[in-house]
Picture 1 (cartoon, rainbow, N blue to C red):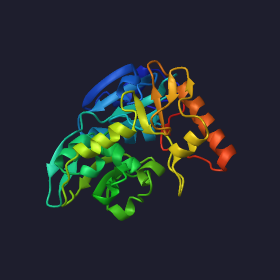
Picture 2 (spheres, rainbow, N blue to C red; picture 1 turned 60 degrees about the vertical axis):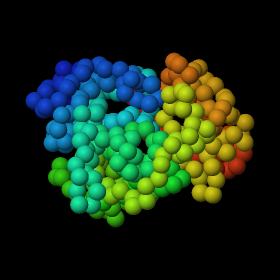
Picture 3 (tube, one colour; picture 1 turned 90 degrees about the vertical axis):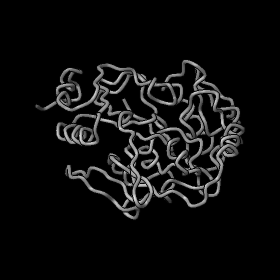
Picture 4 (cartoon, helix red, strand yellow; picture 1 turned 135 degrees about the vertical axis):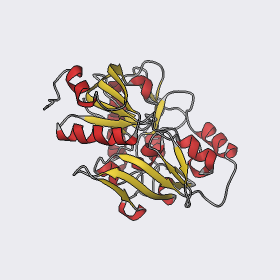
Length: 294
C-alpha cells in the first residue's frame, strides 16, 4: 500500500494497525511537548515494544510517509497546523535493565530516572533517554555522551545496529542520530563513580531558568566563546513578546509560553533574535530547538 502524505488518517492507520500499541487519530500534539504548542498529528502511535517502533519506522520510510519520534517532547516545536503524517511516541517504552556496564534503557525511559540511578550531571533536564542521546543533552557539569556505552538504532537500509560511542558522532547538542534522523531504540549507560546530591543543582536551575512556564529549554546553541542568552540580552530583547510567546525575562535563551502561545509567535521571536544578534555582533545563532515544518 503506497501512502501519500496527503492521505487521510485512516490510510496512515492501516500502515501500523497490526502493530502492538495505541493509535490516536488527529491528536493535538501540544499536550505531548514541554512547549505545550502544536496542532494535531494525523496519527499518533504509542508502540508497546521496541520491535513495533522499529517496524513502524521501516514502513514509514518505505511508503515515504512523514514521521517524527518524540518521547518527553522537549526541544521540539510542532507547527500550529499540526503534522501531516505519523508521530511515534515512546512513552510506553520506558523499561530499564541492569547490565555489567551499568544500565540498558528503552528510548522512553525518563532522564529523571537516569538521574535517580546516579547520572547526576543531567539533573533538571526534561525529556527521555532517546531524546537526550539525539541532542547529546547536558549541563555545565557534563553531557550524556560521556556516559553512553552503546546505542541501538535502525539504519537507512532497515537493519538494526548497535553503535559504540565513537560511531555516534557526538558533538555539542548533536549526534549522528540528529544529523541522519536515525531513531534511538535503546541506550547503554555507565553510571559515574562519583555520586553527588542533585538538590543543589536543581536549586541552581530554579534560580537561573524560567521553570514556571512551558518552554523547550534553550532555543539556540551557544556560539563558540559566547553565550546565546547574553547576546540576546545585550541586543535588548529580554522580555520581548509576540502573542503569548516571550523571550524570558530570567534567561534570554529561553522562549516561554505564557498561556496560549502559537508556533508562529515563537518563530517570530526566533527570527527577531537571530536578526538582532547578527546585526549587532555579526554572529548567526543556530537552533538547538528542532523546528518541525508543516
